[in-house]
Length: 246
Ligand SMILES: Nc1ncnc2c1ncn2[C@@H]1O[C@H](COP(=O)(O)OP(=O)(O)OP(=O)(O)O)[C@@H](O)[C@H]1O
Ligand SMILES: [Mg+2]
Image (cartoon, rainbow, N blue to C red; front, side, top):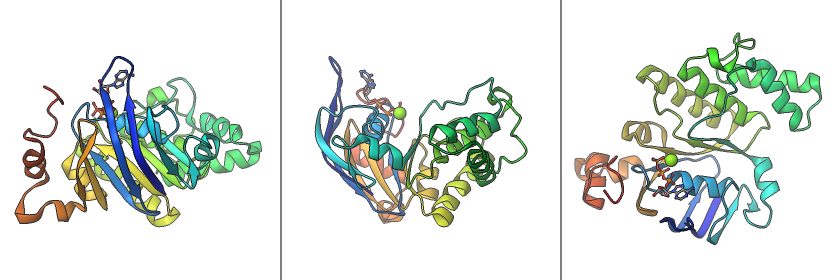
């Protein structure tokens, strides 16, 4: 579902944010980038979603060449950005409908699809609520609902649960698991949370200063009874969450 070869991004006058990233994600997997602030997670994700041009390297995403065929890639993926994008003023149902119509559905079909994705994320009943009148956890679910409107086969989630309380986080994990189980969606996410990575991901790519420093199933990385915290500390010499380069 994702295959990258030597994907690199050097910001102009800035750091090499992603360095020679070679990785793959199989259909139906839930894979997570785990890494501290500034590790390059968002940069990598923005390249994979066609929003940022790589400095070098190549990738095939959802069956299409990232650089040669970005439109086809975009048609098959959904993306929830780190900051989200719910309009505070527009009622949810309406906004979802417009979104579905932008993807070419008739009004009737768009309305049906809006109801479907709201139900999928347990948001039924909130159709008339504007984005500004939702809790943080509800808003994050709405972000995901938007990203699902066009039935993507691959969903990118950049820090889906940052700022949510423990109950909302666990609920969102359930939704992500169900998306995979019931719709067969492949999920690629980023997180700072070890418990989230452990609970949700089949496989983790631990990223530090633009590079993958470890890779494997959460259980495999925890060999010798070490926690992921300890694994990370061993690999990088600093605790997770500490600013890269600090
Ligand atoms: N538009 C930009 N221009 C210049 N440098 C940037 C830009 N965006 C990000 N960077 C730098 O690239 C590096 C990687 O940033 P990135 O946002 O990919 O990290 P991240 O792993 O997503 O971090 P966080 O956990 O804080 O979201 C950082 O050093 C950051 O300051
Ligand atoms: Mg980020």
